[in-house]
Amino acid sequence: MPDIDIKEILSTYDKKNLVIATVCSHSSLQIFNGARKEGFKTLGISVGERKKIYDAFPLGKPDEFLTVDSYTDIIKHSAELREKNVIVIPHGSFVEYLGAEKFLTLPLPTFGNRKVLLWESDRKKEKQWLKSAGITMPKQIKNPEDIDSPVIVKYHGAKGGKGFFIAKTYEEFLKRVEKNKPYFIQEFVLGTRYYLHYFYSPIQNNAYKLEKGSLQLLSMDRRDETTIDEVQRLGSIAELEELGIHPTFVVTGNIPIVMRESLLPKVFKMGEAVVERSIELFGGIIGSFCLETVVTEDLEFKVFEISARIVAGTNPYISGSPYSELIQLDLSTGRRIAQEIKYANKKNVLDKILS
Ligand code: AMP
Image 1 (cartoon, rainbow, N blue to C red):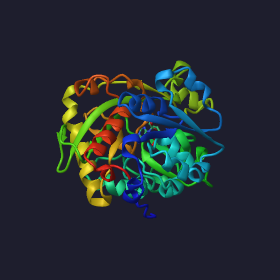
Image 2 (image 1 turned 135 degrees about the vertical axis):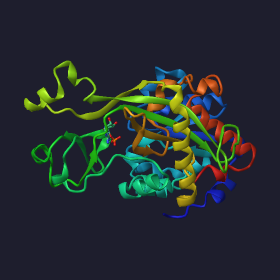
Image 3 (image 1 turned 45 degrees about the vertical axis):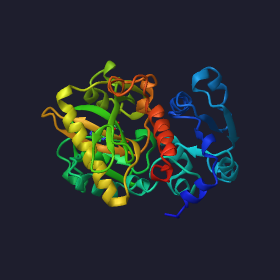
């Protein structure tokens, strides 16, 4: 990973006029709205003409736009963005469309620890991190001939669950698999899905205490995925599969959810373990992250994925969630990010939360 000297860049910044910027998509309305609530100026990086939509949401509209033709053009504008004292908030679309490698070299102060990408985007390393933190993950099936219960087959780098499929037998797997694409087979965990939205601050001690800093649970959601989540309106999945209609896992939206309160201690234990291990492995996952879980009938969590930044599942909570309302009224993840930047700036420790 290239060494970007954040301290050096920050030393040229006018700290009284920091600007919060992100790419206009994903959770940008929430990020701009949250930054505005904390008194920051905002800048929207619009890839192509996306500006018009923001006129419809004045409280989520950035103060100014930078329009670029493509994601890679953002890098060309970094000097201009630095002159504006920009701090970038990465989100899923930003990182995915710019590409992890380019994102790592973006010469702009970005919220969070970019090193996490090296652990998150590589399935083997992700597993090593989570397993060594004591997290239970779905079983991996190395040899497709060993499929003897439902599995989910995931293609590497598939965007938004596209192309994933379920197989219950080796024969079904053979019928469906596209052999030329690298894939990964995982136990299909039966249970209910919870996408848990955490926030880890290495510099504040006002929440669930960790060795260093503290952890919050800001919200949780369930993703709405087409067609799997509604396909049963037409018939059972087994029936439909026989007719050659296969469910897909393409995310279209997010549904708010709360969990039975007795499970919260486990939620915090998992979050704690993931953070503590990340500190040992790469200096820590900073700010927002999400554990994507299935809760089984034995009330055990199986974590099938981690997202190391703000997830779109936080969008239902622009004016607070049933959890964040117990921390501070009207607190979204976007606002919490802005608060962290404001606090770090006040204490002169911005380099502890930016990379
Ligand atoms: P992912 O791209 O890994 O987030 O997976 C896309 C979707 O597939 C998830 O949101 C879940 O609905 C489903 N999914 C992924 N892994 C599993 C699993 N091991 N068991 C059951 N469902 C899963």
